[in-house]
Image (tube, rainbow, N blue to C red):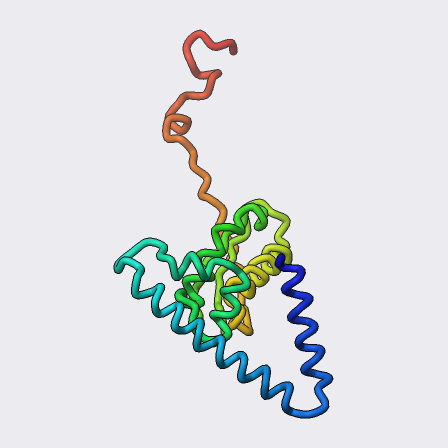
Length: 180
């Protein structure tokens, strides 16, 4: 089953639940959600216990790397990575889409993610495109985030450096043998 099939099935389930005449269909769906949530909790507990302590990407993280599985784990509050970690891991993958800008996670506070965006120097000054790319990446990595605030910080221009040697050199016309 590919992602398109999954999306279509989810849409169909939602449609059936919305059109349910009585509450039994909704009650059945909730009971199934609770049941597979418990199964997922047991699987993740077993997998996490088997992962070696103290480092690296364990099996729990590799399982959660699948987008569909990640959504189910998030639904049941079972994802092995917190929102901050997932967002931090998503940002480096944006480099090519940010037109030279850089994004940095400042904080996650409840359902709010705060980020800092530094546009590349010498750009046109428009940060709308990079901001929307960053927001989309944050919401994809951490669907539980409801608000994304992006502080656009202009980088100061680099200082102009004049080599000391050029200040100490005599003008060409004052050098011996130079034409007058």
